[in-house]
Image (cartoon, rainbow, N blue to C red; front, side, top):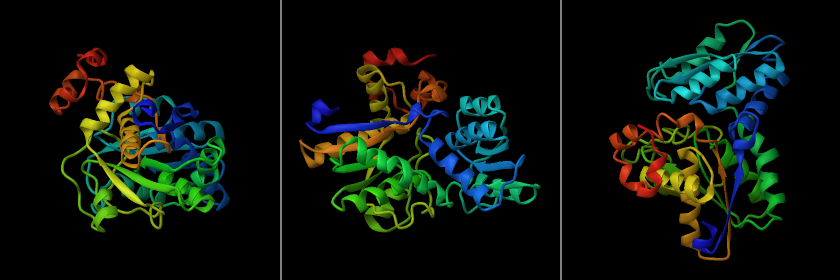
Length: 315
């Protein structure tokens, strides 16, 4: 990707974290915040509404710290995520997909469960700014140090807003000239919000999981975002399979979206710049969705995968 654009495209290998994703950072800070505020005592229960990776991070932390874990999850997520959570000792409740405005949204159900359970805390990953603080204190400084301060642009897909916001806040303090660009999947409102100030969804729904939004979270409020890119599933999936066959990275579609955005930025600003994004997690949790030939065909995405790379699809 760097060779074809003339830019230095770098990515944080977040799949190397203990729970296997970028969300491990937020998970630790959310639990530490609850303990510090006296909301969670020894033997208590950590409750969250999550598309998967934050829950997996929380489940790992709960195992190591002696807490119970209860996860509410929309029922359109990969079964591999559910199985992993259960293996890690978490209890999982899957619920129908409804918007934030609906009282049966998985986040509201998580909050209600925590409020009616003794010694339980809803970590509230979307609106608890301990999430973005994790990236102000860890991811942002790591990017600054590991690039020697030579970074021109950062771009990330956004679900809670923690990574983009936290990294952006830290790096802008170091160098206000650094550009912060939100990469959005189809079906989310954030692209139109950044470009036009309107909370209007773009067309379609996305194969990506855990990114895209229908509102502005507290973690995203006030984030120093300079621009936004709309990355269709065709580009995200194409890049996911390119990363597998050309770079040797077995990753999920949110990573494909991130790298596709980085390449698009590189082509826009021209050679000689350094662009940073992240490899969110591995592809293992998406084997029966992203790497299913039937699923890809049903979504009309087969043509965006180069023919030679379709060998990685299973029937």
